[in-house]
Length: 244
Image 1 (tube, rainbow, N blue to C red):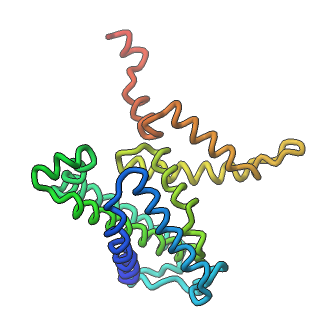
Image 2 (image 1 turned 90 degrees about the vertical axis):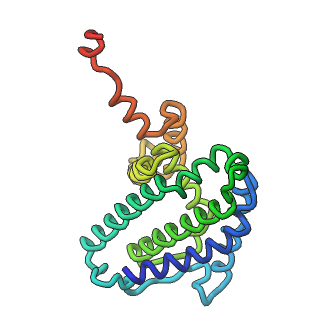
Image 3 (image 1 turned 120 degrees about the horizontal axis):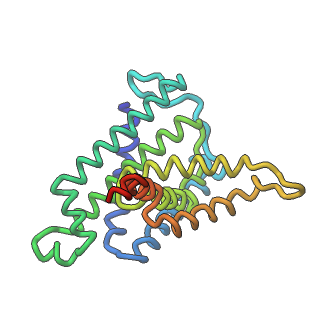
């Protein structure tokens, strides 16, 4: 656990440095600058043989997690599940803290928040650093699970996957992100395992089916899968409708 915290803190420090420049931008420029830094880091590892180069690095043994033996698959599963629950509880606490409420206010109207005395730059930089730290924890768990890391993990497609997970689950709440992540991975494996129909290999074109699925969710469930479930749960039944 100490090793995980140390590695996540290292990524958080890197996010602090990058965020000091990135959070000065807004809108589409924020996205462009963030992706530019991601590409720079990608090529830093891609062109450096000491860091594995384009082939990546193999992890011959799982990182030390203190009292937890991550070589045991069952222990690793529950360790990851505990990390998920801990991060969720922590972010929920942050959301309802004065800091979280200030971030919500900055998202709605940054100029008004600055006018009443809140330092928007410091709050956004702290949020960016926190996101980088949690990304570092996720990277630690990925490496511990697969035993292999390569520069492709810092490519644009991984960022796109994270965005699609949030869209699938429903933007604006943490539970939606969790639902979206599980739904995305489930549908990904489902589409990859599609059988061939005649001479057409459906599983080979899983990106097409995933794209159509994302478009369908956006069209028919703008609030994501979690919003759709909430809407269905709140819909009155036939008997309740007749009584009304």
